[in-house]
Length: 306
Image (cartoon, rainbow, N blue to C red; front, side, top):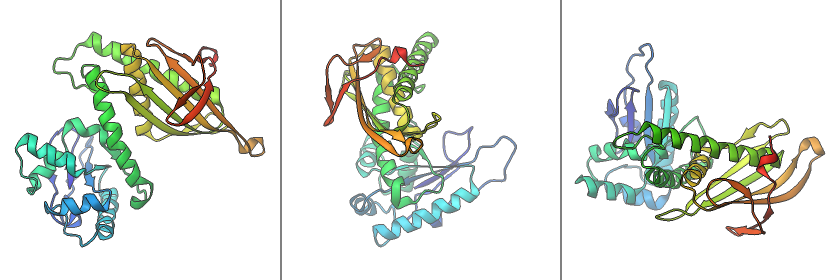
């Protein structure tokens, strides 16, 4: 379930998909100036998915633990040999539906290769930088799939302008969406700046045709304003805010957590703020809000935050 591809090619130069991922590791071509070598792999994230995927010959590892060990070895090798290493969750139900849609045999390696590099699913890819596979990275892969589905929904609502999926690109429409995306990013930035140092989680919901768009992101903010947030969570939050602002959809956001830092003698205070949007802008909620079980008071005015 691995692929080796260059920047200029949509299809892989060579794809894996054999029973043992280590044995199918692609061979790296000699580096040329400007070349961007990329390695992409699909990862089974739980024992139930592993059991189902074995029916298709995806792996011959005797158990899920051994599968993870082999996959971690493959990823470690890829880090030494390729410029970019990316992974996405190999979801058996998604794969089965993909094969049914395209008339593919799920037991054929070529079917897994096509599923792995399917362009509409590129939003599910995560950069791998040597993290412990069985630690935080597997849950991030699961969240990335969920996030990717939301991103595809948002892109569909924006006629493909969010990720360039429009059949006939309209530059005026694309500029309009880019402007909304920048406004969404600014809304998020002002929420964080107003909160100050601390450890927070943002929960966001925008009511949209076809079902609500939801996003969440954990944020660590230091005294000097430096913020730590997973890139994929940041992208999702901005995309959902973008869709809401561009289409003037109603929404609600809650930022909650512990406000404070070590610089304040380790004093941390619980905090929870809420904002709502009628469409064109975000403002403090006009009453207390409960979102996903979190109660929050009306937030501060984002217009007063620099």
